[in-house]
Length: 216
Image 1 (spheres, rainbow, N blue to C red):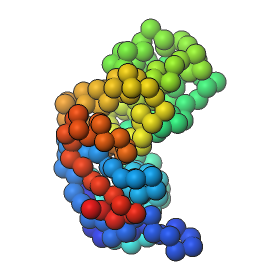
Image 2 (image 1 turned 45 degrees about the horizontal axis):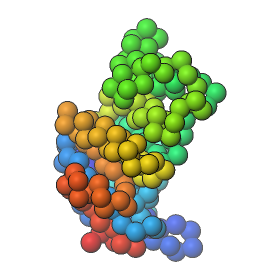
Image 3 (image 1 turned 180 degrees about the vertical axis):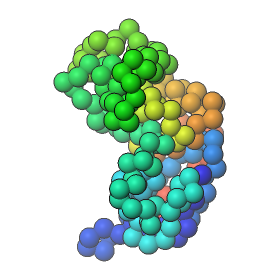
């Protein structure tokens, strides 16, 4: 599913955010990427999502080497991913439903089918009754659940999240993590970058521990 071999990401100035990292994530696994602030967690998530290009080494996702992938092919690869960020990246001038519809509109799904699928995604995260609201009217936890609905509406095989509970209180964070666990239980590969040891102790996922860009 996801195989990294001697993966390195070097930024201008000679800073290696990821250094000679190798690992394998099998289909259907739940994996946490952990480490201190600045360890390289976000960079690794961006590399897997093809938002960043490796400097050296190889990263193979669904049989495709991202280092050799043409830029024109990247949008098609990303259709297999659901992406959830700490800051959600919601569109605040559109309704809850329209935010979830956006990925389906991009791939050209007929509107009637898109609405049905978007409402099903909102129902899974407990927001169907808020479909007409604007995101600004939602709580922080609800906004993150909206981001998850948008991430899964395309039925991705891999769900990637970067510190998805970093801005939430304990109760909201627990609800968000339970959603990820639920998607994992139905076969979705779930990869979460987090520094929170409590979630690791609670859910016992496979763990990739980074320290200054290196995998321990």
